[in-house]
Length: 612
Image (cartoon, rainbow, N blue to C red; front, side, top):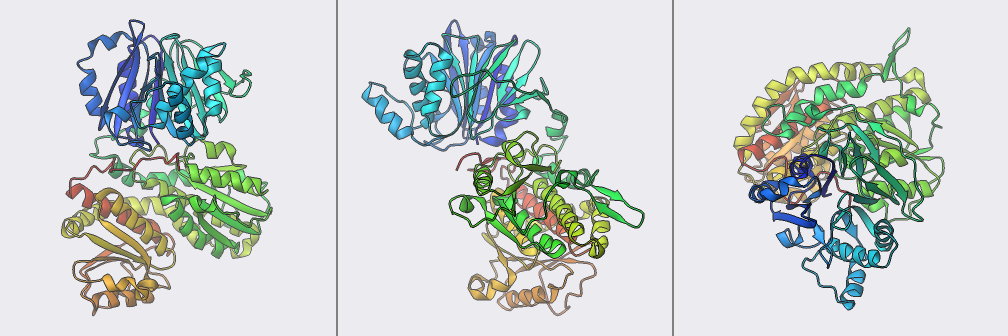
């Protein structure tokens, strides 16, 4: 989950590294560091805390301005406390090798014991320092630096993206990958390596994606990629990234999160673009990626966090429109079972980044069972996109805020299209035209509603910001939304919140309700509205405060004195989910903003969970 950037070129490396790290800080912000070559030796500077702490140190290290090759890292702690001694880069015993690393070396303790017996001494508590010492050992008995680097990586079990700089070959960066993202940026007389595209997007849009079991040797005007086993040279395709840094900037907004929430009308429109066609009698969905897909007997959706919630939401729609039995699984649980999968069962792996470690492992498990796998993700060229049999891109653009917003919106949009596509494939005569028309109208309708939603959510935030606990209640498709609303509130405001199916309140959780334990109830205008209304009454009877999220054609009973009635526009029952999602995101954002929290970089979290 950490951020990695490396540069080899003709410009001062330190400014490029810190610029790149600033674009990756959403991946980790416990500590940061850089290593460069100065007067033939490695110069390392690092600091605990956010990148600004490192930049303050570098302002006084003027001698580093001459170095044109270097590596940098922003950390999210896995081994060792977030202290300066555990920050990357880490050095070898002889001080000639510096590495930055994302991932977990699972056998680091075994390797550390072996190295201690050989006289090595360690400064940090990290698995990364162990890997640096192991590389030193292997290079000392190898024919070349590249050979020793590869030998060490073969002995390291687990997940890693590693970039190495050595004082013996200061003109070369060495990089290797296993189950963690790493890519090269190809420029003119300068080359880059990073864990994500934004690190170098201001300098080049030409990218090479490293695969597992591949290593790279990167000079300023050349690059070579080899297989980890045998070091045979590999041919690699250069991809061109179509989006630019403007797409990944705040554009005057105080936080990425609010910018990305307000982008959702455009995200929906972009996701629909080219996927709906007009026929003589109606419109219908076309997903060209699925043209050769055999109609599955069952569908299994796997995901983590927000993507899991999106899958739960899509389950209702897919079963209703297509009649395909659909199960939704938490990827981190699915991967450690021996699931009963049939070869004609379809698996849908949902991940914004396309690099989520548990979801990627679930995808691989499904493929070993003979299942066809669809990857539903946002990042072109990501691991899930490359390894899935079919990939559906959400086309949401870069999402920088750690708390996902437009990711779920885009996933819900594409899941809607998938449900409609499968429905029309099975039985075109019962194709749900009203839902599709409502989906087409949604971007403009949501865009028009946003200003009033913003204003109301800000007022509610002040009123409820002192709460220490919150319930989010929903039924049917609103239950996954309740889970997501609770997740957003606790992610960025640190207020404890739980999402519940409203009918389960009576089975225990209602015992906690009192005047200081508010409830956010999703009461959309669907067939379950009377049931949710009854649940609201149960909360009110116990002096609980209630925010009721309703639509303007609801018939909420006037004798239910909810504390706040948040009225959303009327629309198709399924499309109402998009309004409810946005409302809860805005509420969470404004609560956190009112409390002065670090919204884009909440504590203990990182954007892409690429380790277990």
